[in-house]
Image 1 (tube, rainbow, N blue to C red):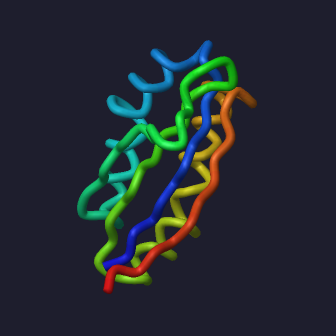
Image 2: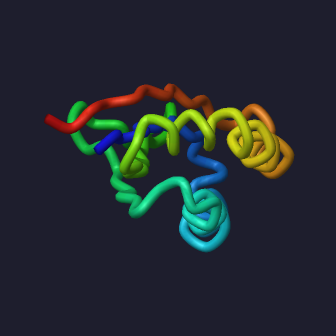
Length: 102
């Protein structure tokens, strides 16, 4: 099992709209690609991320194979990432990593 981990820091001003977009639009679109079996969406609470500089969230997508992950990255990620930038501009930053379950 491979875990595609995306950590996102958002500005306070977009929190409500961004959370709704993630839950109703983005995560379902990623899962609809068929490359991931499930997703987990969490808010980072330690270190404390609330305050003037925004909030931090983590989305983990679970792929059965490395090929599913790479296929998503090559075929779907650029389009779906672009949608986020069109919706929220530079009001967020994202850090992506890949983990392998042992």
